[in-house]
Image (cartoon, rainbow, N blue to C red; front, side, top):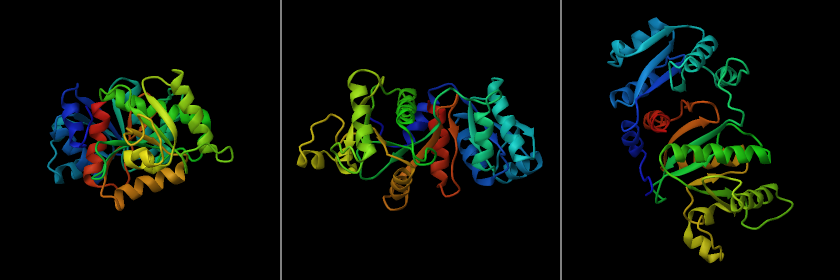
Length: 298
């Protein structure tokens, strides 16, 4: 069974134990609005770190009941990030979310060798996308973090993406490794990397997934395009996850799907001890809410 709509994430999250969401620098209206909606759906319990006065004012204007949340007063965004991470380390929260703080200090707190949430591998951005032109939800990695990943980092990125699908209850997702063309060209690293990842999958070195490539984007998502090019693969035209070669292509693909393709996304950072909800101000209200739901559903 495939997921077809992001709203299904809320249903999955409702069936799981309610997660405690630690928001770093939570005095941000758009973030609190998404947190409020997720709380009303019963999928998270807010644990807010930031300027308490501002949080309470914003919460009041949004109709939030401050009795149902925990607020830790820390007006400095960098310190609020460290506090939110500490709450997770202490077992007082299950998910981390970025509020009114830049990405760099938040990730610095996450990656701190002694007090952070490092797990040993590579952190990577994962987006689950609902497109009106694809027959199921589609994962894309990496649109925001890894600029020019080396081969081992690509292995980690696949493992992180597969972990999302496993967390949602889906075994053996199909991973299409994207390149400019569907044949191996030694002068194009992305095609060579794709072939190596595919062979690792064949030999069981990449667990709980089926990886194939290289695929040009058309034959990864269109069976008809794959058939025209005589590509015979269970992944072709039915990919669950697209892994792009590097950040340029990943970011362009992601934003094109959003702004020209009529898509909606839910996105998290994977590879730390807990999922990290790291939304952009350009994200829609639904995208922010669904990103929380994705983290809560895993």
